[in-house]
Length: 54
Image (tube, rainbow, N blue to C red; front, top):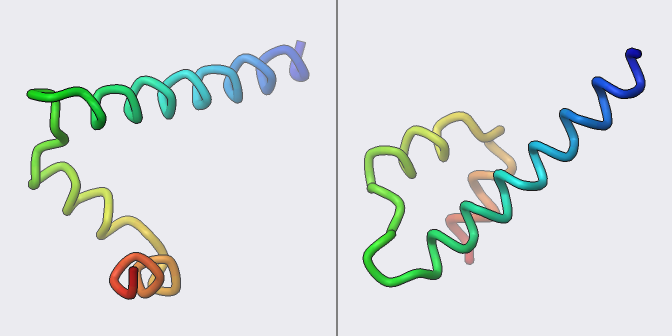
C-alpha cells in the first residue's frame, strides 16, 4: 500500500508540473507575479542563484 501511495504522489507531481508548463505557455494564462515570487522564495539559495544568473 505504501508503494502505491508513493507512486500516486509522484504521478500527481508530474501531472501538476505538466499542467503548470502548459498554462505558462498559453497566452492569457501567465503565472501571477505574487505566486511566482512566493515559489521563488521557497527555493534553496543555491537554486535561486541559478535562476537569477540565467
